[in-house]
Length: 367
Ligand SMILES: Nc1nc2c(ncn2[C@@H]2O[C@H](COP(=O)(O)OP(=O)(O)OP(=O)(O)O)[C@@H](O)[C@H]2O)c(=O)[nH]1
Ligand SMILES: [Mg+2]
Image (cartoon, rainbow, N blue to C red):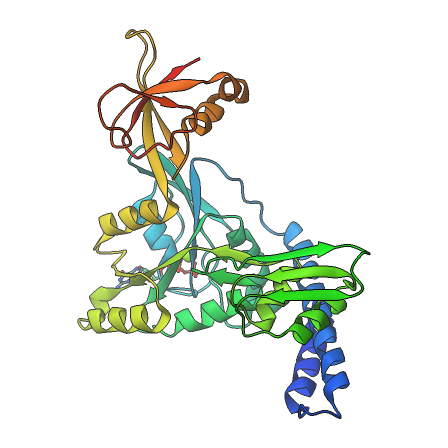
């Protein structure tokens, strides 16, 4: 951790301690408001300094149709898992901190090329930069799915990992709350409109002021807490999908109790596995593919001499999206398509360019 981020993180600790010690009443109201705004500002600065630090960290080159990050404590078996489900040969060993950089591997599933990143182990206080944690987490943010790897003998590691992510404004398996901020000098102050949220108008105004927003209309459509609003206003929140792999189940015959406990405690999908014994790995591949929300379609050329080519798309893509993946010009020219498969009622059905495709469709573009 650099000197600046360390100073900021100490400052945040001090402010938060002061905040927790201050009794909230009429006399202290103003002071509390100012404290909250200060906290918001320091949090923002920490995130910004982390972003810069991450720039000098490892370079993660995206390739393929989607990317996935393996995240977990050191020595839980991330590298062993990567080697088992992809073409990678990441170094493994019996001691912690074996992997020190990002190791990519490609997992091919149903014709999708899914890039899996093996990341260095994360430890408690990673969000403050411990063990290079900030760099690891920022590399993770650029992926489409988090795959937590947890040692069956230490299930509560998951809670620590979730807290580390939360401290860097990564919200796991949560839908992004709808918050709209329209700044304009036509508003006398921060005008707040809340539909249903535990946060109140005054808090919203204070937080906005903390970020230099004094004249605006703020509309909050979903329930969210103070911290979440702060990171949204700072424009730094990330919403990511995640699953859990409970590894080394060969070491605990009562692993299914652990798995059930975690699933209910954290409300997350848990798959018990053994990376070294190759147990449940097909379920892992299936879950990764499923959570990435990908579909595979087939493009049928007009002349039967040319080959049919598979194409991977995000779920709910249209005929025009598929055309756009070949070339933006083609996307503009497409008027319709003939489709055979799950998204239509009969083979070679003519559909518009806005038709939503499904996994397993075969498509012929009509210009
Ligand atoms: N018994 C058992 N051991 C495993 C399993 N998976 C991994 N291991 C062992 O756990 C140790 C650590 O595995 P790694 O894959 O290097 O762990 P890692 O999470 O990549 O560790 P770092 O790179 O240090 O973060 C090695 O000795 C592995 O053989 C498993 O399913 N069962
Ligand atoms: Mg490793």
